[in-house]
Image (cartoon, rainbow, N blue to C red):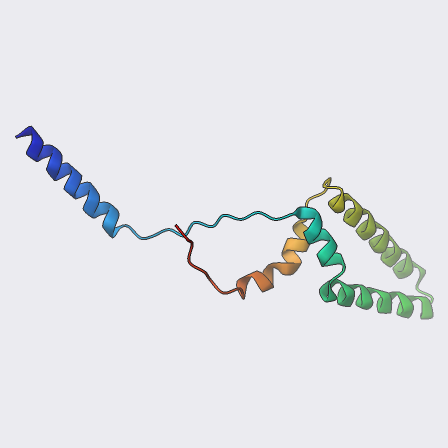
Length: 113
């Protein structure tokens, strides 16, 4: 009788697991410094920098010293952040946020189990 009870419990557990929705497990690693270098050499960053440089030129033409100072501070802070990220002393959240739209477009792959 005890064997039948244990068998029934085992069967119920197996059926519950079989009907449970499959979970996707994603495991990955990356070399943080490589991500930093690739991002700051990318077309995405170049376009962002080009827009800021155009703003700087317009501010200088308009003699808007406050805007020039703001953009100069932005550039200095950005360079310092990039150096700290490359050294592993700062998070790369700004890079991941900039790349996030591209992550959504990646094809989904099945995990090899």
